[in-house]
Image 1 (cartoon, rainbow, N blue to C red):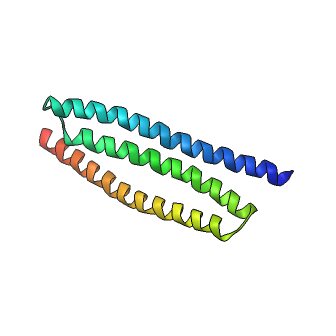
Image 2 (cartoon, one colour):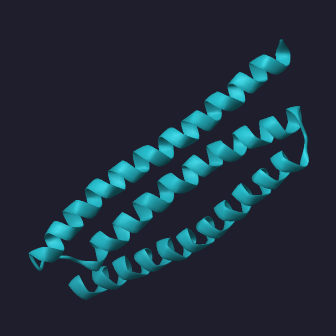
Length: 120
């Protein structure tokens, strides 16, 4: 009975991760359409593109965190090579995305500081 409850909890946490990723993709797609509309009208700025990339990356990372939590729970319940391999792959993907997202955030902050200095 305990194992069944914990499996349900892991499934629920995984579902939350999927919902976060899907929601973030929809939000980012809407922002993408707005950015494209601005680009077509010649009013695009680097800030718009950066915000779009950061938005999607943030939702992906958050969703992956939930998926990792669910996989950790599943791996503890039924440790096998397949579960450990899936967990390792997700952690590796998340680490790479996090690394590049951190670089993106630093670049955006740098651009914002430069723009603030130019306006002063």
